[in-house]
Length: 101
Length: 172
Length: 92
Image (tube, rainbow over all chains, first blue to last red; front, side):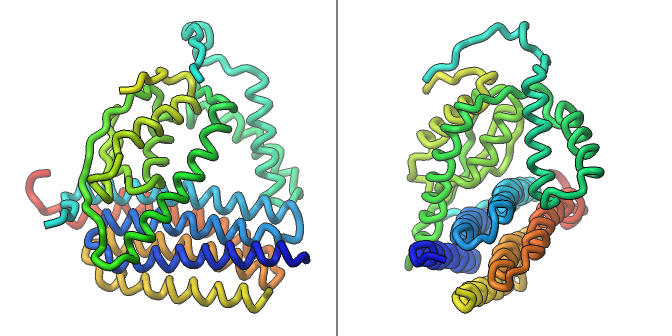
């Protein structure tokens, strides 16, 4: 395992976990459901992406590396769809978006 | 780059054997990844069934490999920008957000292109697709003062490049 | 490297635990469901990290299944569970 690969892994994983933390902070601080969806969907997708790409240099085989990328693509598709579905259901349930007073 | 217009009647719902082979190969690779290259007794029938089922799920959507190749880096870069933008807003004191819901009428005419646009909007900086009803997209924006219309216009052009069968949009 | 991977797992778990506060606060069912989305993505990240830390590639398969289930859960939720809340409300 080369040093450069390890440094890349450390940097990407730390950046990824930072996005997860920011996503949670946004979830707790933002004022309504819509803004919370923004925080979670965008930050966590990129967080997972950075974690996956950080693990690629450590992957034991090409097959495992490709499977990791597949997991990320699936989450990318799933969570953007989930964010849309949740926002749509909220609008249809008559939940008013928060606006700055 | 402009998309050359081709006769619409000529290629309606005709799936070339090249595309069929490409789909089967893509499903084959997917199976190889998921199964670790084993269990082809189940894999081959599954790949054939999946290939046959594609027209049921997504009828006649032509996509352009070149358009897709241009779409991916655009998407990755803006998705990263979106995450940084929302992370900064979440962490800053005073919570610098000013949300609003805007209506955007898209000129994309294939459903697949519209769905791709709606899904991508959610990951771009400061926008969240909240409703897709025919041509009308309702977008929740995190910061009403941001360049939302510009961003949606650019995204629409990129999506039109991905699915060139859709009307090439002229910029507003 | 293993220790570092576990450290990242710990950061993620703290962040997921923080999200649980929102599940308690709500206020709508949608807010609580959003935490399920957080747990889905977060658990997938934790699983791929543990797969590498413990040299156990089977955990990546669990991550894949979890990613699929999270999406299906959300579809089921918006189609079946949420509109009931306002079922007795007039109009809309």
